[in-house]
Amino acid sequence: MNIEQAKAIPISEILNRVGLKPTRSYNQESWFLSPLRAEKTASFHVHNEKNLWFDFGEAIGGDTVRLAQAILQSQGHANSVSDALKWLDRLIGSNVVFVKFEKQPEIKKQPVYSLDYVSPITRPQLIHYLHKRGIPLSLGQHYLKQACVLNTNTGRLITALAWDTENGGLELTKPGFKASVGAKTISFIRGRKSKPPGIHIFEGMMDYLSAITQLEGRPFQDDTIILNSVSNMTQILPYLYQYGYSVGYTWMDNDEAGRKAQNALTHIFKQEHSLMVHTPMNEVYRPFKDVNAWHMQKLGL
Image (tube, rainbow, N blue to C red; front, side):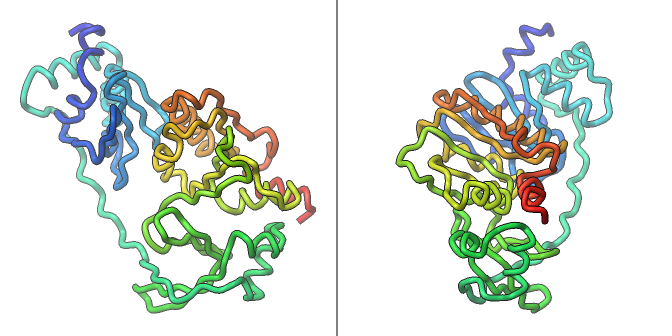
């Protein structure tokens, strides 16, 4: 098999041969569990028409040959182009799947939180936490609430700051504690302008509130998405699709994970034809790890 023949193989067929089915598909796009590692939420994107893939967890992608190389590398095998072509020849030339994947690791049971009540922020500990992070209480009261939740595994009640997510759940935080009520997902904040040209992407709510505080409490004219976790990155596609954004502003952390997230967002933006410009904002808060750390330093906290 030569390179041209290899690139003509549908990526979905390769994934099918190694035992992976799409978890969801729409238009010319499909999502799979990654063949490069164990995961529970599909983060492996395939553009069927272009026959290209991108793994958002690894921030890498490419054509069929690059996929074969990545799979071989993930399993500790030789992974030159020649090795990849031989592997594809064996895989596609037989109904037998030659690749043996390691057993998925057992997932440790996570605490499940159920909502007891929500109220305005009144707890002194939570007000002090906002102050320590440089967030005015008036701004915190606008975007956040106080939530009491029950850890259903231990029966313990916990009170924390909370904000809404797009599935009707809540994200929770306080010193030394982060959790979710409901499935973990993104939060969307509408901008001041109707049908704005831009969309801002933040990793966390505290980064967003830090940026808003620097703007003297005025929200962006453009819309904003809070990822709440970089693992939620694939969930933003429906919010970008044919909406008409022309610029994507990203506020990822200044570390390796942030770099990978930024690369992944570049790929996501390329899927939306109208979104032509990706503007990383990292230079604003470099050399600090994130927006909140930069904001706290400016306030002398």
